[in-house]
Amino acid sequence: MGATGRVMGQVAVNLNGRSYRFDCGDGEEPRLKELAAHVKSHFDSLARQYGNVGEDRLMLMVALLIADELWDARVAGGEESASKNKQNPPDAKPGAQRRDQDGSRAGSAETKKSA
Image (tube, rainbow, N blue to C red):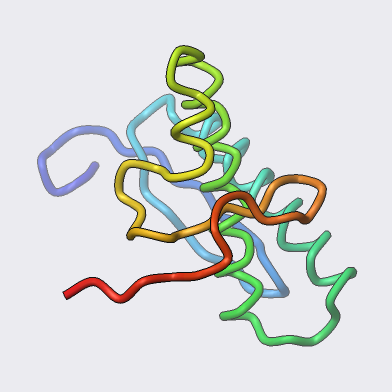
């Protein structure tokens, strides 16, 4: 049982030769395992592609890839403002750019300092 007296599930996530144990709500184990497998898939793919660039850097790259997937899904869900949001997301700083899937940059090449 968890600290609140509720039954808790546990999932062991293995990544880069390490095992991490996570508590979750009872019955949420399959979803957590699925999410962990998604992260591991990206991590392993980037590790093969870029080699030994450091675990921290690989995890940041994974986080950015997954954030990009989420952003694309949000844009696809709100087609009316998709072209605006793709180039300058609402919380992006002026001049911030997004790398499209073909590797090209969208938006301006210059970034401005905000005061």
